[in-house]
Structure formats: C-alpha cells, structure tokens
Image 1: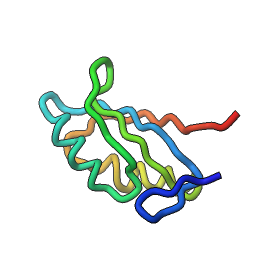
Image 2 (image 1 turned 180 degrees about the horizontal axis):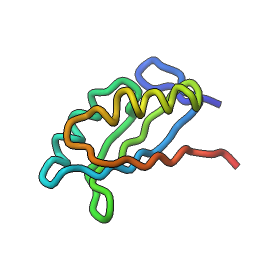
Image 3 (image 1 turned 135 degrees about the vertical axis):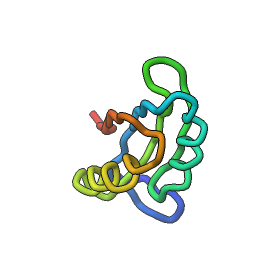
Image 4 (image 1 turned 120 degrees about the vertical axis):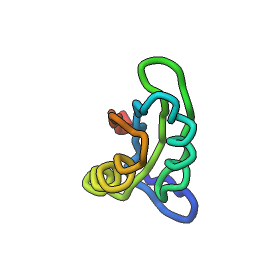
Length: 87
C-alpha cells in the first residue's frame, strides 16, 4: 500500500542516513527538503548528520532517486539507505 505525499503516491519508502562535510548539515537538510520525493529531513547526532525519509514508485526508482538527486546534494559525503518493509 502506497503513501501519498504532496500529491504523489509512493509505494516504496526509505530512510536515508547521511554523513555530511563538517559544518554543512543544515545546508544539506534544507537542500534535501527541496528535492521532490523527500517527505522530511532532519539534522541528528551520532554517526550520521542527517536523516531523510523519502518515497518512490519502485525499488528501481528509489535507487535512481538516491543516485540522481540525493547524492548530488552539495555537502553529502556518504549515504546509507534503509528501505521500509512491512512485515
């Protein structure tokens, strides 16, 4: 079952854990929030600097979204994608 966000239905959701350059986490949050498909983004503490919740129509689309949009945001050094599963 998909989730509707900003008029789009997304059947695949994921959390993306982001490591960013020192001092750039606020800019990364603001930039990722502007990317279509991002539901929410927050600065966090710990081994990651930012957590993004996003959605896509398929797993393939999710991969394309991460490589084509998220990883191109300036200041991001590494990402870890955690797809949401319904058990």
